[in-house]
Image (cartoon, rainbow, N blue to C red):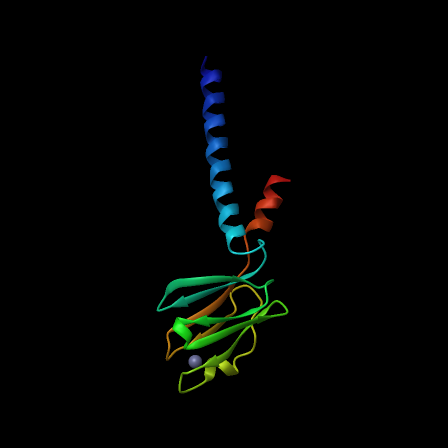
Length: 123
Ligand SMILES: [Zn+2]
């Protein structure tokens, strides 16, 4: 009977792992197509997430900064900050690359989706 109990335990563990995995997948797909995405933070709090595979211009922080996504890269094309450092930063596309606008406390950071790692585990 001990073996039976252990099997039940394993089933429980597998269910928990599956639910956790699904949650990760759902989060990944809400942010885009599971590919790279950019996370927009204002004063350290996440405001928006955009997929790098979808081109577009996005107002950040109520329009103080304009983020543009083109060809899988994100760049700051407009900002009302006095230094304009963020506008002059190079477009970002790799994991952990970021554009920072200090005066407006805006951070745009690239995050690589976790779906690829998850696929590797299930295959
Ligand atoms: Zn700036």
